[in-house]
Figure (tube, rainbow, N blue to C red):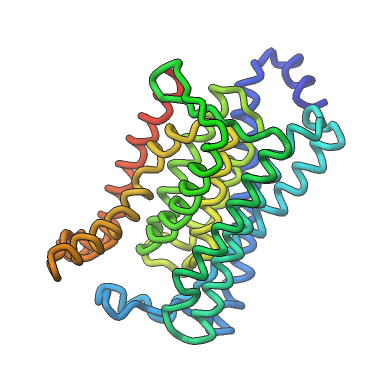
Length: 349
């Protein structure tokens, strides 16, 4: 087995090997994503699968004609890389081939892909109807609930669902019992929608996802969790590869297809690792984007028309304060890195 042989030859500890493996996976997925995006982008342009532009965001007028549904590029690349990795793992080339160890990784991938499929349906409806409606809120919520419930049921049936909620910065954990299912269900649905809402500026969702993915790699090394390391390495490689085309000015958008996939993968890693609170801290930029929209809606109703932000989600608020897209993405990314550091410390301490 490659893991044991490398450890014997180099005298490198298992935790360091987890980090190396995650980086190798990231590099492979990065290359595959760049290649697949180069191949798929001309097809999307030819088919005129362009992002419908929200007319209420005047700053986005210049984005008309930019292809969307780019999430399929890094989803395909991720699945190809993971299929190869799983085959090598099952053949005993990489490490141990116990079926139980692969189940959380497989279900994390399923959670990401299933949410990505919901996004694909949403994107397809938008493109066919040439409008920004897509799936309505009720339809999307029902589908997301079914996907999250199926994921949790399979995790529970295979004895891979942690019911103890670890408290960062302490040695304490809160045993949730059956309540864990309800809590995780709400958090998964809320989180995948938060990554979706964040995808509103060139490179924003990609860069925030990269920072969280890197933090998850560090966490996997600290906890000695190979499969979280592989999944998070896959996410980092996919988003870095896509960012080559998605940075300002974006040549392609990920669409709901990609943003919902990101949320599913992050939540799969958080729940299977039992570090939900720490990952929420790491991902708080995503979460605050969603909260800003919710706060805006509630405040608008309570005050009969007044607004808490100039425009929601909050990245639009800063656009109306004359911040450039590059400045907003950079500041949000730096804040995300700081929160990721806090989240990782919460796991360590």
